[in-house]
Image 1: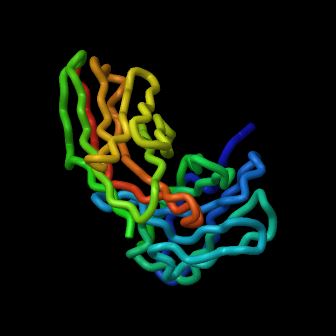
Image 2: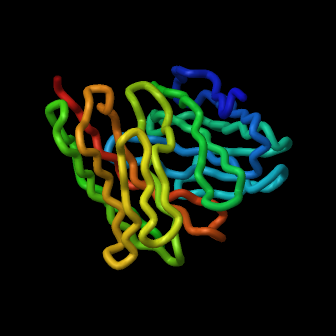
Length: 113
Length: 113
């Protein structure tokens, strides 16, 4: 099992550009989520999905879109990148059964100039 | 709402010292509690967990006990090693909350030889 994989590992964007961060899991987990990690802020939930075709907003959803067409994949789209979106992004998945521990990918470090 | 408060870092210790990282929580409902660890340049890994009051989670010499009366889940290790240098996150999840993990802000631990 590869677990949760994310691509790319690093990315530099210019303000206004768009891009998609990829996330995939091979554990047949129903629940997937995206977090961003900023210094002194911990991890904040951006969007999450409880199954294919179902997504919802987390704590900081503005500027990001998601979709979930398959159980395995959960891409995060930045529509028009802004410097405030410079962060490290983590994807996570969970089986959705107790005690609900989540498994994290290695992260994508994004810089917006 | 749910929240997690953990001691501010950074924490610097010498090898073989005793470690305590405090974590307290508030939750609407009955949470499961977790400690995650993030080594430099990596994603988060589940370190240990506890799902009910008085449960003790343990892994790699680390322990934490779920204390409902004090709403706490302090992380301890009797003798730290240089390889334990990392950021530690306390987190909780309440079943039925659409699986949303709530994180503390993280505590950076540096262990010197």
